[in-house]
Image (cartoon, rainbow, N blue to C red; front, side, top):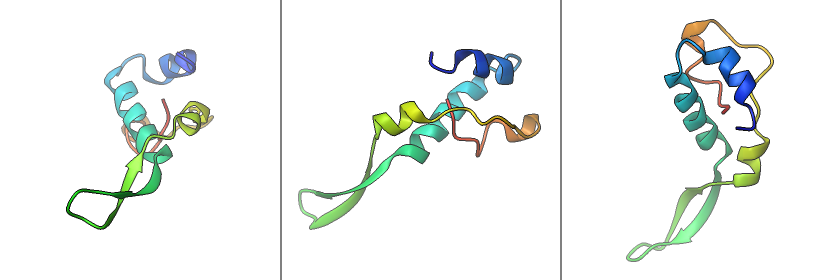
Length: 75
């Protein structure tokens, strides 16, 4: 919703890439956190950082069509 116009401009012909770019943004903005798990001592986990995710915006410059789905990390 926040970046709808930019995403439409980038991915109008290949809408599945919107989903993949969102997944990439989720991974990039997740924060490391230490957690105590049952049976384990301490384990590093990744947790959602919603404020960081909402701040993430599409880049001004994109590569070619093959580059758009991976490595861009935006939604």
